[in-house]
Amino acid sequence: MTRTLYRNARLFTADDPQWADAVVVDDGSFVFVGAETDAPACDRTVDLGGRFVLPGFTDAHTHVLLMGSALGQIGLTDARTLGEIQERLRAARPHATDELYGGGWLFDAIEGGAPTAAMIDAAVFDIPVYLFANDYHSCWVNSVALVRLGITRDTPDPIGGRIERDADGEATGMLYETALQFAWAHRDALTTDAQRDADVDRVVAAYLASGVTAAVDMALEEHGLAALERAAERGALPLRVDAHWFILNTGQDAENLAQIARAAELAAQDLPGVRVLGIKLLVDGTIDACTAAMRHPYADGSNAETIWPAERLLPVIAAADAAGLQIAMHAIGDTASTLALDAIEHAIATNGDRERRHRIEHLEYAAPGTAERMSRLGVTASMQPVHADLAIFANWSAQLGDERVDRAFAWSEYEDAGALLAFSTDAPTAPFAALTNVYVAATRSSALDPSLPTVQPQYAMPLDRALAHATRDAAASVGDGAWRGRIAVGQAADFAVLDTDPFVEGESSLLTARVVRTFIAGREEYAAE
Image (tube, rainbow, N blue to C red; front, top):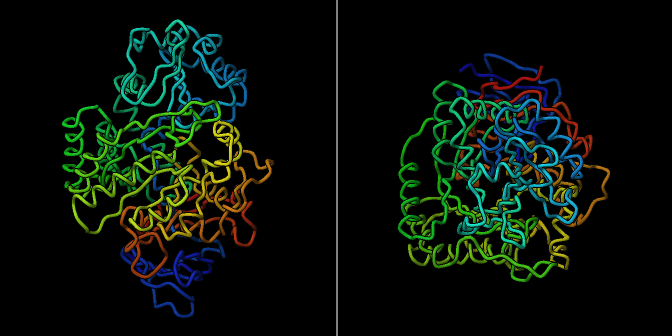
């Protein structure tokens, strides 16, 4: 590759020193970072026009195929009432053939927070409708969808899930947690390889236009693996993709451990398009749906059990740790994150001390002292600032209804404790745009509705640290910190060029800033028209 000087720029390095005005790229890596006057001779010079440059973002927790599918569905996040949701369904019905899919709706858009099949039937009754909630931990369906999925009053709840029922025992149209498997299995059976290929293409285009150069898929399964491999083989996957294999609690240790063996088998292979790093488990659900496992009950007096009880979880985590797999556990409530750390400590005691970098995902409300415990154990805090957007916070806080709300999404606690803090979006449960994510982290304000007043500003963090958690630390969360994530000599030349400098224009400019060029390993993979 031609040795290229990129000059006349303001480069945020996420390193020390923090700023530079020129870089030299050779053979996919930075070979010089600093002042242009000190740069070595080059074969080619690119003038960046004084623009702001930063390391490429790593979306350290996302769902690639699911995000691609969501980009092609009815978007409902900004539908603030049942009437708006129904109107969008009516508008979409003439364009649908056999089924209709949508996603992103919020519980507080439904009065009383109790969606029913009849509510969808009032808009679309003749074909199945599947509407995934904003957190993708529940699915709202209409009556004909219940029939198509074969769900009746006699259908048992799966382990870790619930089919919502009325007083007479009839399904109401809501599927919670692992009960989503009815909808997922049905959709997977109907989705073609061509559709999955289109999903991957949508994700690649969206991420590159957002300055994202790497993504970590947090629920990879066989269909997704095959789609990523096909994309790589046809030269359509410039993104760096890592993945965690999804492990479902079957209730049987032998079956659970067989899933670990499959993850270990994939991790040992040099796969086209994706590097399988480890496993992903759902220890609990979400606070919005009152399915996250909490030490104290919700405001309505209810609570939830963990999806993985300790007797099932500990042997799985110990086996994955022994196999050298990175373990990522979804744990939103304080009971769940405590159990997750107990399982990691058990694995360490079982398998002995060695280098390991496990993760806990989300940590929306964790018990005091959790951050310090994670720091001692070397466990990464993988968090999603955009989940704290104030436009979707009201329902979250109402479910807890007490002083626990004051420690919601306490990112700075993990930073202060010395734990590795990696930012991501968990797309499609939230907008995938990296700059939006950083805006929420740096302001504790709403990107969906900027007119809302800031809440809990004590958890907002300086812009440079927010950017570093989304670039440098996100790359480090998958063990890549030594070779990518910073603009530094020896690091991969993954970087993005913006049309706005948020350090000059202020954090609010992140909502309107545009990525104009994205580079991966020194190759320009995206240029805005």
